[in-house]
Image (spheres, protein in one colour):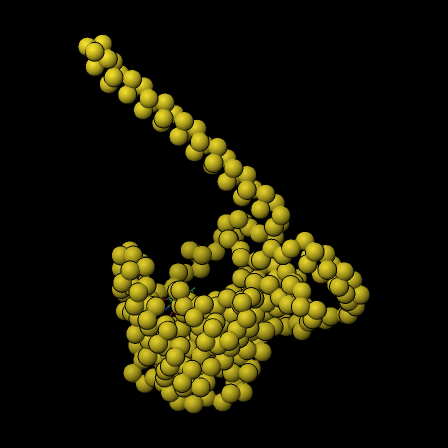
Length: 294
Ligand SMILES: Cc1cc2nc3c(=O)[nH]c(=O)nc-3n(C[C@H](O)[C@H](O)[C@H](O)COP(=O)(O)O)c2cc1C
């Protein structure tokens, strides 16, 4: 008995060490497995930059084959193209004026309810639709909301989710970083702006035979379109604020009856700035801080 009572703590320690070694070796194997899975996924998605977490949806092999068979890209004719050229002087003037126009753009969170012509909205969305897109898939849908009731429902959904975001999901650091902008979950502009434009990225397309079509780089493509949209809004003398309503996508998609292949990327309220609008006095980085010439 005396021997047993002396040995038991020793045996206990040995058993514990053995268990730790076994658990660690199991973890390593799992890690290797996971890494292997990730690599094989990356290999089958050659257009995906792992850093960018592209959400281009992988399609079943038969759907891909179907796409190749249907593709009429090979028969696409190539036509002569002579884009307009300017003298160097004119180029300098135009580039400076364009910069000055865009440098006046600010995110405005106080938007008047003054009406604006629908045709202006049509034109700025036409401009956004000129964006380049991966393999010319044009993976965007711009939902324009003008109905006051629908705008209000959108506000209710966003304010409800944003309150949870600010209070629970975003964390102290993010909320603190936003303090200087004086933003919170109350978003009056969702009611007052004459138009809300909700930009959806299509993570895959639907062909005429109901088969799926790969939308390469859909998020980058739609983000470029959003940039052009912002520039077009500025050019029209209107204002907006870029918003990415966190965790609101699925509810807004259902409200607006958009299909499952569409994911909300951005929401832009569009209108005139209200008379008492203010913006944070932010400074932009000078050219030498953002440009590297090699
Ligand atoms: C991807 C992205 C998401 C943003 N999301 C929000 C948002 O949810 N709410 C908001 O009030 N502003 C949002 N902004 C606006 C930024 O706060 C704003 O662009 C930044 O403070 C610089 O100000 P400026 O746009 O006036 O130059 C967002 C901007 C970007 C580019």
